[in-house]
Image (cartoon, rainbow, N blue to C red; front, side):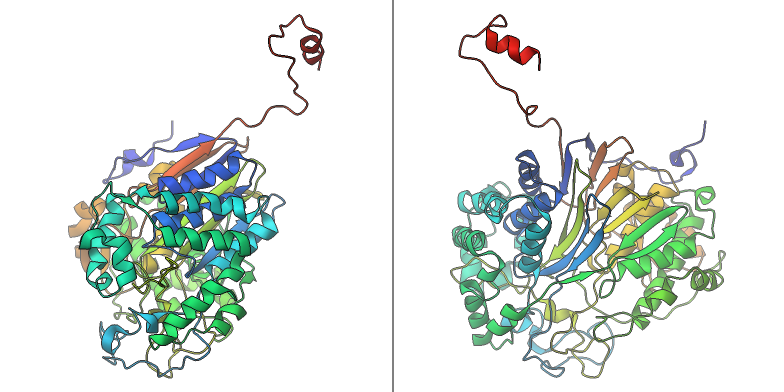
Length: 573
């Protein structure tokens, strides 16, 4: 009998959650009520796209600190016929913005991205042109089965009737409370009676329920060309920001072809630039392919050292060549080639950490959400969306309940740089909604929040699944490490390896968690699927089975027995 990864690992761990399996459909999100919203769509005949959109809309209510209609993201869709596409709705720099709109506080060091007055982080001057609602409505219209009114119904219900907040949401409100006190609309909703609500408090968002009702009637046009957009543009411009009603009306989503690579007989597909994951996950897997990772064992100093060295290479290349492909030439073919991976592999010393400089202090918020859905017909969605920082720009459009993004903080505030502000530009993102296939059939779909730690965490999950043979639940809950070149962060599950990694030349920092709650689905050849969510968020799996009655079933009159003509007729069908 082949030994399991646990038999050879110095860092075994216990999963805190349990998976669920079914054949009818699967919804995995970072909140139980959002998972319920998606499962409701599957139960009434919707598909995986309907479930994803309903879940995301519900998350704007129950995870308002992470995602909203005025944010951005990436949705990776695989249709039942095998077609794949990535819907890019990342936020963009407004038409009236310019490279010099902010005053940077430093030309180097850890405060390189900061500006005077936090104007790129908080308030109307931090808002970029959002795209989430455009993307959700577009994917529902093109690939879903249900009307938008059905998809918005759970979110409307949760906003109007309220829901009991979790410790996770209460803690997020506490962290942002000082900024909320400067905005009356935010304080009225999230600081009832002037204080942070405790877990279990019933949070009602009446204004937002009305906005969702308008969206149910008008679609994305309610925000992108309609009344909600005019309200958003007005408050942004009154506060000195740049987003205009014309920016909102002219926003367009992009359908992009996934970046596809191979790893040990599997096909790995992920978003192309401006997302980093499709390029650099495949690059790093190709580098790793030349090593016997299984023989090294999970969580050994040797395997952790190797992962850290590969992450350093990936981040160095990301720094040198990443960005919006409309403005930056990203050498995708070179970075993802097996020949380039072999050259990168030759730079790795298994006995010593390679010295690196501290990389650019780029900013990418860790406060995001993710959903993964699948249906019985073979459609699946893995989607990551956000309003960037915790509660975005930390103000609310009065009378709408909408919290705008603060995506302007991800642009370089210094003119003349690769990530400097240019109207219409989209900043790079680490979002990694990935689909792994074999022999043309999906095997895994996964993703997570976590800013710069997203695609390295997704990379490690794939290694856990393919090389170490972990179960899906083990793979998403396993300890993680992260580095972009300077020091190596390790979760507490790896703390026992700190001394050994230090001896190899790594600077080590033990942290509570790396990245956020991963959501994943595993697919079997017989049509069964398993969903898993991890301990790093309120992740919840809901599986569906059964379904509607067989077509043609009829019932006889009340009181009919099996001897009635109607019953006998049905029995012969």
